[in-house]
Amino acid sequence: MTLVEPPFGAPLAESCIPVLETERLVLRAPRIEDIPAIAALANHRTIAEMTANLPYPYRLSDARAFVETLAQTPDAATFAIFLKTGDEEVFAGMCAYGRKPPETMHEVGYWLGQPFWGLGIATEALRAMIDYIFSETDIDIIGGAARVVNPASRRVLEKCAFQWSGVGLCRVRALAASVPVDRFQLERRTWASLRAWGSTAMPMRRELAH
Image 1 (tube, rainbow, N blue to C red):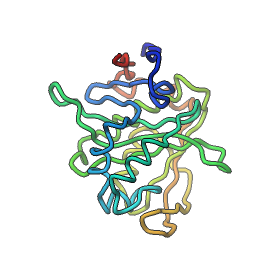
Image 2 (cartoon, rainbow, N blue to C red):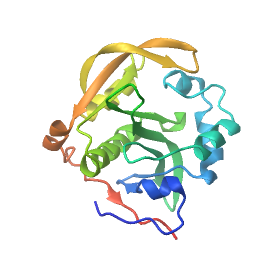
Image 3 (cartoon, rainbow, N blue to C red):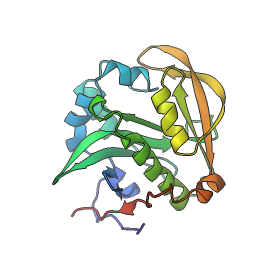
């Protein structure tokens, strides 16, 4: 992975996080031009009910507010996930990491649009983001959670070497209620011992377009 400085005058979000590239995916900061695609994919009841913060229905105004108020900090980042398809890159979902006080552990989160389920995209994106976290920050442990009724999300965490750490409750905005979740953790030392992710290479840094 090579480090690339953002161009002068880049938007705040893009100036704080890199563009990551894997075999099939490009991960970068969400942009204003992504708003219609975000609204179209996120407006899905099942997606909203399996995530903590997505409302349902998810409107164009929700996507705009999300992108325009997105703040990137050294210990948090949000990546839009794009699938390479020929000469195009198609928006497929979102992944992020961060910490919400009073919690002390950084947590990862992710969602994919329904047309992209079952293709291994979430696992590939999450691995790229984990590689970035542990190779470019001083974070030593990250957490994750999956609703107990969402085995697919649990499998993504397990394929990324997360270890089950217990159960808990998570507030789901779309349900206006708290639901039971399985909690997971991944330590830097575990990641270091499995850094190659089998045959998967570390994500590359792509230079931002001027």
